[in-house]
Amino acid sequence: MLSMTDHDMFRRAYSRTSLLRR
Image (cartoon, rainbow, N blue to C red; front, side, top):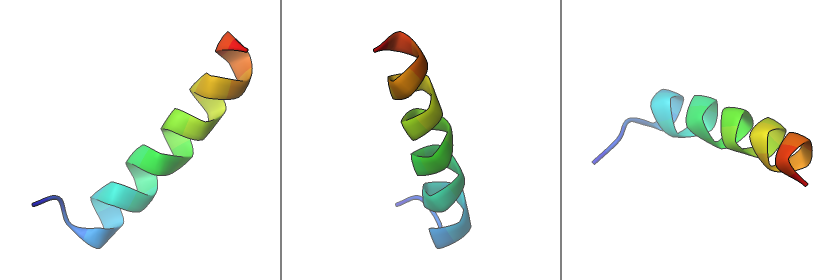
């Protein structure tokens, strides 16, 4: 499983990408 830090970073990056893609 991904570490908490990795997950948080991934979530942040995904959130930004989602907004941009939107």
